[in-house]
View 1 (cartoon, helix red, strand yellow):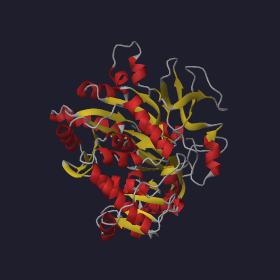
View 2 (tube, one colour; view 1 turned 30 degrees about the vertical axis):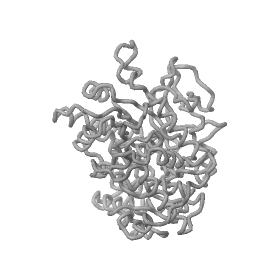
View 3 (spheres, one colour; view 1 turned 60 degrees about the vertical axis):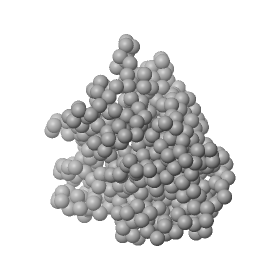
View 4 (tube, one colour; view 1 turned 90 degrees about the vertical axis):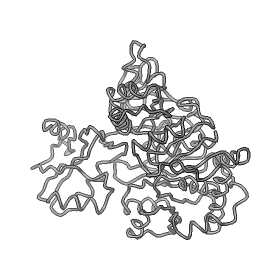
Length: 502
């Protein structure tokens, strides 16, 4: 079943129900949302887009993001959401690897793709192509898709530094959406989902269940994360649900306490995407009250591994409430979760090992990458690469994130990707990148360099090749990198060196 049928059904029954908002201004009701998606889908089909084709969305948060996404699904194609913060060259790789022929963009982003020499049609939502698409003859109904058909091709970087495409099917999106209502939060037509985090990632994955319920979809007029704007919109709309990285939660708490904001109108804040420090979530709950729910997932099992309920986040009566609050919760209803040893064999409660998950929301594999798929999916289990333990009550605690992964402001940064850019400099003989704790962003990128390169030159090199948020915040010159007997760089030693300097 094509998940876009949820929009068509909502439009049939509740065409005049408010749907899309830019700030406080309504852009479309559900009837209009459906009509716009149908017309853009008709235009895509007229351009030669066929079922199974990939169509990318490289846009900042705005109502047209959802129109483009559902148009892609209506046409039977698969959406390729691309982080709007990526460098043009990074986007070029994703578009090339996915075989994308059409890309929706928003003002200010199209130029980066042109400069990168992107092949294929670029449809800027402020341009004539998109205007023509919105007035094109609509398709009659969403194209039929099987549950196992590709719906969303999500690119997540791997240890090689090259992004891998995670195949997300219509069944997976339905599973994530339906689990939301049971494991995370109830949703109704009176609710509103606020997109303050990138719609290409976790925030966008919750749009489907809100379409199913006929809820309102609110994009901040700023197109991004602004604490004052969030509080204003929450007060205006009421019953607001939003996704936020832990660093966003901390910033909201700090601003609210400084300005006297109570968080009126915030119904649920789902947090994930990085380590949430215990003191930070306690402070947030103390100020905003019982509005927080935590989830844990990966691109390979989007938003769907575990959840820590509103009750568990708020409860202070349980004798082990702090341990539970420091966990990522219990397995969501559509998956099995266990802790395995190095062979994948199940370990008893309390044992440290790799977190493993299987179920209908786990990917069938990586896009055209059987080698990576074979390493990651073992006997039906997703090997997450994350280490932790599960207590006797089923609460899972993460002890280490995926090896060497840096999480800054909720965005994943893979050191190898940055290192490969630095090593292109003729005066860099070795480079190693690690994360350093940062009070606002969680972590920041630090590069250890062997060689005589000028840090300013290295900064320019990174600016030319990777997204700005991936650039090192410091370049530390060392005579040599610490290594083990096999010649492998000891990043734990580099992190220790940083700790000694702080």
